[in-house]
Image (cartoon, rainbow, N blue to C red):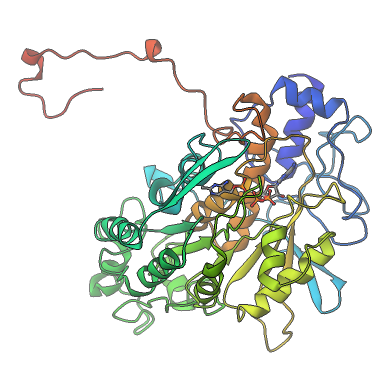
Length: 497
Ligand SMILES: Nc1ncnc2c1ncn2[C@@H]1O[C@H](COP(=O)(O)OP(=O)(O)O)[C@@H](O)[C@H]1O
Ligand SMILES: Cc1ncc(COP(=O)(O)O)c(N)n1
């Protein structure tokens, strides 16, 4: 591996992603070594403490005294050396905090190294409700690729057929509300849905349809829970079963401690469930969650400038956002500005201020993930995760967590928002909480952007590389196909593959 490739690898590791299977492209590595990718120092210095998330592969971190981003190194910014102090990977609960502007606390949290995985082939079932992009860079096709790459089983409901490519949008055909309703019901009547990502909704009627579906669907009917590998029954059944009940009488309500509809602000499962989970050795958070974890990317205008949500639908969108049915909203800077009715933020701090105002405006129900892709004045591409303070007795200030990131010099940013929100929805069932999922999603999208130059798709703003963290496909010729004749098949229970 060349030095430049090693630099890229170290930078991505520092951003928290375990990319044991990733491989930096020579062209991208060249760009880094030629200094086209700037280290992020401008906005981060003096503004927030920043700690690289540890990774299983290498816990190297930037040791900058300013606490700058784990910058993607350039010629003038050497890669963290392998002799850099090693992080104590067991400080999962350690955090540092400082104030960046009045009333807002920025916290940086270590992500526990041993994030629970979808072991045993169990993949969370993730539904994308979104529009199309026939070039596969944005919309539902991009969602499918992202969900798969992030470890989920991908499902999709099409809201709008959009004729577009990497340069322009040439036509939009929103589906009827009935068409969307039938698709949604087809899925939820048959499949337990663990997480939902919502993208382009298109019209007021479609927003109302999705709103009603989220509100009225009985997600408990099919169990609605991601089963722990090895469990015969799902958790609804386990909790209801006296044979497996906790020893402490009454610790688990007989009907299961159902998560109330709406976000109570307490993201983690009730204490009773935690006890239950520990008692039964459940390692990942299948929790008492009933309705799917839901992320909305409030797509209003495409990167190429076309409206993807009709202006009269914005009222219906606000109703959905304040319903308590949405867990996280992921606006980009223009969308954030539109949602708070202010000019587009030009600095990270302004963006955070707007994000906290949006959190307030949404009644504190919906967490706000602020995306920095449109920050023109700076080389930071740190995002921010803003959540209501669960320790309200101590402070009512929202908790803002900086998710480190630096500008990558590429035009391949078509569909970054779609991919980020799908990654977030897919990681949530595999993580302890939203914050851990946010760190993972940010690290994953960073890798997908960094590897985008390996693709050659379109003449405009190309897509990110959704499969950057997957292994190379095995060439079909290398697969030992076992040809079974009719005669051989007699007496066999299953076809050998
Ligand atoms: N050139 C870039 N370098 C690094 N990260 C980027 C770049 N462009 C976008 N991102 C990241 O991609 C994610 C999506 O952000 P953004 O592009 O703002 O969303 P959208 O596609 O909705 O406009 C964010 O995490 C953002 O920081
Ligand atoms: C169907 C669909 N959904 C979303 C986007 C936004 O894409 P971008 O992330 O480039 O703003 C898009 N162009 N098309």
